Length: 138
Image (cartoon, rainbow, N blue to C red; front, side, top):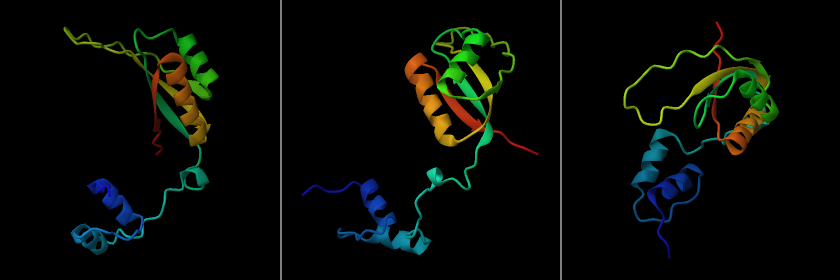
């Protein structure tokens, strides 16, 4: 019989499964902390995760392309681009290996599933690493 790792053991406890090991100290600790009844994440269900404006940081594998290409690639991937702020001058660092060009996009509100799909498309089609960030409103 295969023994479970500590991570599998903890996941089983958090899921409410019975623990079939001799050492119940982890199970006791979790029950004392009150973590036994965690609810699953319901991000796909909507509600609390409404579409919101986001910034998306794009990191390119080499030199950053033109602004037109960046906007067209992001739009074709499925992002609703509102603006592409002007690029800040990159700091000059002597001897820095593999400096990568980074740009930011402001995108209009859209569902998180669409943003995830667009991010995956940018990585697969253009090797552009994209990370969305929520905007902060006053």
